[in-house]
Image 1 (cartoon, rainbow, N blue to C red):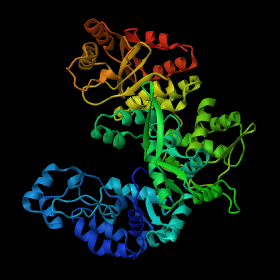
Image 2: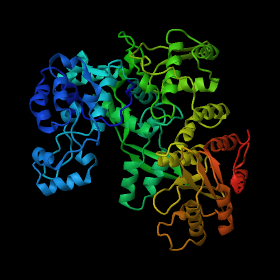
Image 3: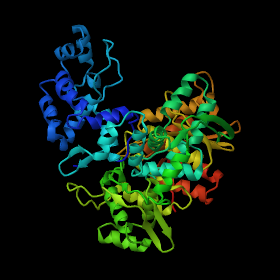
Image 4: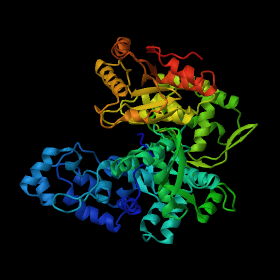
Length: 604
């Protein structure tokens, strides 16, 4: 059974982490309370109440089924009668809750759910006595990733480790608690990566850390542009707008950085210190203070020295799960297997790129040099110590827990997206390879916002156009400009390609007319973000690929507005960026390229 361990986005409370661990420690006070009170009172008879009790009784705690530990989601709903009996609701309250359904009326069906009470207030004024399955699983993943709970992939079961039991039984806030948690963190690669970045680069924001954490150019490891964040905060006109940016402007790697740095703060290896940051935004410097910024402490530096093998203690063993070698990429298992073999190839033997290529080929993976180098750099970015010399690459860490699960096939075939990505990767000599993530995001229907943000980051941070992400109601997704030329941008993430329907063409026509007239038709006046000198405008649609009758609607926009523009798929977007960044395509010519009134193709 393949589970996801190694990367945790929601898990900040040591108390809840301890509760999840203690729930499967035989005869602990919480374990007894779960069996005798909490599970009997809050898990309906018609679900898996007696299975849960049996799973955490006596020796059964040495092999707790993962499904029972985590529980199910909102599929299992409570009845009106169960709501009345469990929570003391009136009949009318219970009926209203049941009618809404969803997570608000989900039954408790997992040990970890009832072990960690929620912060949510119920209509009767009480706190809800259990979490949802997502929150509960985050704590399980956290415990497994740090070695507090041992996971058996063959039986899909969990048990508490000796380290985990000692940590869970330590006094809250004690030196022992911090010491045991620190011992676990020494084996957790992303924590070691963050400590090293702070040691080498000093005071860093979550964005500066996030941009250097995780797998390069891959879905699941996005980082928001700090310049867009700073500019957005500094130019926000209302407190609500400023709060919205602070709460929602965050990539997945930024979130990992914030979460892991928060753990390190709790054990005093890192200090949270606000940082005043100045960034160029729309052609001018803007300054704001980013609270989620961090510095390494003396204690953190001393433990980093252990991680690096600079003390008598020697290097700590790193826990590397096969599952953490990819997360949200469309062909995650292929990537995990490929990276597993790269690790195996340089784990005990120093090898050159050619020797690594040969080793991979023998195991069914034919890769170009650029892809191998990116994977090695990514392994460094997740926290592995890899020595690079003229004679090749060698992993300096001892590695534990890394194996391909028995139920996973020997995946050696790439998806079409990966094939395109590896082809483009070889041609990007001047563009940061982190922007290869645009290929993943453009084909993911659920990643529209991330696709917008990363696209605008490419234009502004990488290519040095002036511009910004807009998004939201009655505004295009973004705009960029240089000198007298400006472009209105609309991005669309579509798994099967985008046909540019007439409704979207009409929406672009409305934006163009608003930009022409610049009156009171749209009170948000998004066009004011163009520079004062911009007098020549065009539009651009960006998506995974374009299908159907999109050319008809390009002509329709031209006929209605007299604006030139075009459509650009994510592959050609990256090739366009390479030509601009390399100087082959001047800024003036780049705008002309985007005004072809057709699909834009870039020949390298």
